Image (spheres, each protein chain N blue to C red):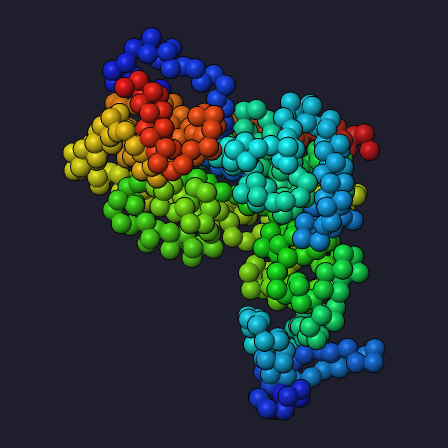
Length: 363
Length: 166
């Protein structure tokens, strides 16, 4: 998504509110890449376990600590070479952990577990390795836009580098052995995060997602199960990990994603025959974001979705994509409270969120 | 033919059981073949000897709850069935038959195809891997995905260097 000029405000305004230099500009939120009008980002995750070590459900506290220490030490040279940051999750506050979940660098499982565990990630959020999650290692690679092969190749290289340092739990029949049988085989889950506002608005999303299910793919919301309706964002991922090669899985997911992109674009074109409808919804959303005094997280996401649709159809010249992406990340509960420097109850959060959005937009 | 185990229901499966160190063929009903909570496998009856041999290692041989315990981590059969999680790599041998049923249901396949880890020396044959990378590189160049093409090129270079060293 290219940079756009913002309605109102000046360069000084931008500078005045540009106190966010410490804010991570993570890869998945970069908003650039192939098919960026529909695809937010591509993520590849590989699940791996070390041979001769208990998996998470059977670990004692001592074993969890020993495993985390062993992996951390083994991956030390790689982490230094790649300039990854390392965090002991137990040493982080609840808020810091939440922020890492909101940045998608760690999973909810890693956030909530009660055992020794850690994460390494590169500062640009292009890759992360979770240590002692449900599996001993969860390698994740993110790329903005639709870049499945590139993301896989990168994950594959990290995997190779790690396997030179530790021995993996492996079987000739079943492939990579994982804690849950739904990950056995390749251990690979590839997810494509898609923005599908036209299909949602036209009430065609159910039909589209049913078709995806029939192609043996899974459809979930931004933060997994139960977050389906927030911001018209959907994660499409492979359901099966055993019996197909990585390339076949990539090809199958690619066909599913390609068809969704086509459906969504076709629906957007249909909307263009009644452009005032989309334009009006987008501008109303801009109006609310610029003036509201209380905004829930969900409402913010849904408003951003309408503005983004208007912007990609060049019907709205409101907030820039960069501003939208900042609002998207910074208004989530963890980042919001971290910024406020204190725990906030839901009502306070909504007020603080509205103030922060106005700050970012310079209104 | 009635099920040779419960003698109540028509037998729809042929199953091999290990009895006194010998494989013995039984005609059994679905319930006895799969246990109570298992879904039926895709093939209902097994007619030819080839299929029978394949199934010999795969059809469930239910054992009483809790009887099997993984020697690697101590996970018992009942806990495995309840949690549907494995406790270690050896659990895949201990609960092999249950896993085959689960894989048939959720994965539709029971054999891995795909990447083989580089260690131990069981890595994918380098020429095949090189061929795959070369094809990917070619496709990436044709489609002007140059960043991706560079990754393939680097990977091919690394592979070649590695095989030169060994």
